[in-house]
Image (tube, rainbow, N blue to C red; front, side):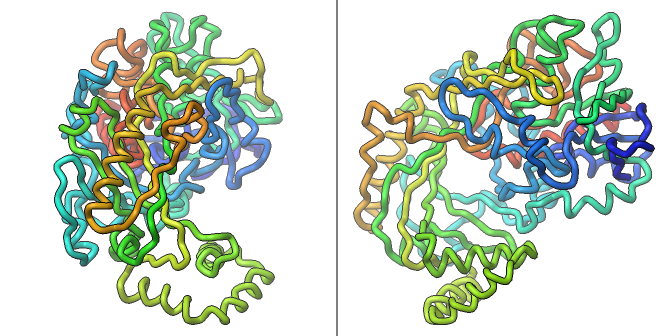
Length: 518
């Protein structure tokens, strides 16, 4: 059932077996384990059905160092969270991401790769992806001749969900469920502990009209994202001055994202598009990617990295216009003016037919008149000094605003340089033409060309002991008996991949455990 806390008839107190805060990807994944079970679950969502300026302003942060655009435009305070706006790209982490790497301080997970990887096929089903294994031969899938082997490089792929707005798939199940309640417009304002500070006693929620309520449960799960999870714990400081779960000053530390940049231009050719542009398996869109071997990473002491080619067109190009019209038509937001613009595309019938032929017959994306740019996305080193902390400024709910301190160190540049030159040399030798590497890689202001990827990782990191992390190997906060954290904030390291697949896998793992405990 979906309940609106803004409704005057909505009660001020709720009780459940399990309380989950947040309704994004991790939460929706966990709920699949509780539908039609004996467990009474309540999900608290600060937002409502639609994104509003008032709700989004709560996510405004102070970023004194490197810009952190994803703190606002990568987070959405709404039912469904960021899944209402994301692309739904899925890519597992590598085995090396879980290992202690001597060249990367504070690396290593307290759980083995297999503890997570066994859920990846379930993640594919949850995202409605084609079940093709990520270790499949990509050249066979592309129906292209295999490229020459290179010991330092691997050629694999990621998958994009055909239905990334997850709430639309699960809304009916939630709204008709007899054991799951979703409470919208309920902002978590405070985590209240028992007198002995050993457990969470209740959660205090409020709306913009200062209506206040309380939620009690046997188990609590924070699933609000890498910035908000930390902010909530730190701001719940009326009983413990350093905040909840922060006895060792680790909450909010080790903030990570994936530094990303365009690094080189490729000479445009159909051969490049045949190998590097998107293609389809059923309804699943596939993106070919470059990866780097474990030996290459160790030899060069670099961060784990992935790279791909993006094909850009001008705003007034036929492909750009057709793509945008198609997207709006699918979403049902195509206006009359845009429909008239679509009719004007008739004069470009030859190009449109060429695009359609590649899509419907070859099951590939062909982007005419495109500029091909090599994109590199690397993991960020887990640095203790990169933090989410609290400002003296407060938001409209009286909550301290988050200060996001994210700096990119020299290891990121070294990784960009090593991987870019390796890929470009390989492409040239493989017959893909001339590659022009951007000058900024060796300039003094190189850091200004690097942006975040809207992936907020590591602020409540998992560890084998409370001296090194906030949560244990089961995602339970070390200091407390009944508080758990879901999402990428528990990742010790960020790895080469966007966090989607792994955070959902960990959510399934946590839900299975809670079903046994409650």
